[in-house]
Amino acid sequence: MKTSIIKVYNGKTSNWEKNARVVLSWNGIANLGNSKPVFTDSEGTAVINHSSTGRVIVYINGRSYGSIITPGNRLIIV
Image (cartoon, rainbow, N blue to C red; front, side):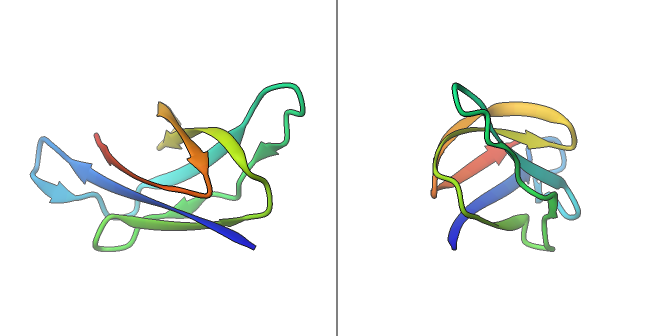
């Protein structure tokens, strides 16, 4: 199983975002679907296990925050 890590930082409060809902969405020709939702811990970290690879759109609390190539890591400021 592959793993992607998303770190979520709240720029307004200057804190790591706790309990943010993170979903990865594989789009394109194969349209492989979405990961299961994972909530960030107290350090703003969401560890998402998945079997698919490739470019995904990162959704935090239902809003799109760009893309990454999975497996991978990204810091996102909300």
